Length: 162
Length: 128
Image (cartoon, rainbow over all chains, first blue to last red; front, side):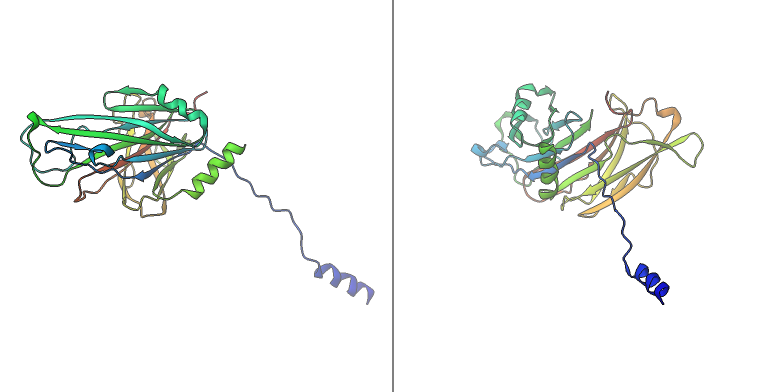
């Protein structure tokens, strides 16, 4: 009887084990489209995303989990991806700037940016989030009025592992 | 440590409308095909307006390198994770550097700028 009780008591105790939870932080870049831009039409021959021209600046946010692992490369448009038929040339201008940061040191990105053609490169040397806005402007040839219709252009936001 | 925690928290909290591809430095593995290697990638789409992503492989000068995969343009639904394998000839591995996914934007009927996102991993290893 004593033996039976001893055996049963052993069975009644739950089995205990330590379960480990492991995790790791690896280099990761996430591109978030915070705001899609919109073109304003301040004068008949011009489309612009600048708020002063009635436009909305497109904003993208880059989240990087590891410092100094990625380059943000943002290209402003130099052509419409869709538009009414245009018979004259379009003069494009644009620029990309840092608008907000999650870490104070990221404000140095703006001064350190490099511009190659219509692409602006930022070296993401710190972990965290950075917001970039891109201004884009298109002026129709010889100050002609742009034909009525819908105009769309694409901003390319790239995050490239170093 | 704190900055990493804050960053991770932000990644979780503000994860909406994002394009994410991992790993940044993928491991090149042998495949079931002779003289062909395989890279295993994972893509996450939380951009509601995007459904398709294009896969590209480039050298250091951004010239295209041949590769094979199930679909070059893959459909990834909103909030979906998708794994995909890229097969590359061993003879091309000396040149292959950037493996990228690019979101395919849809035409709209309002005058606006669209944002195409592209994330590129490096096949030639982590910087030292």
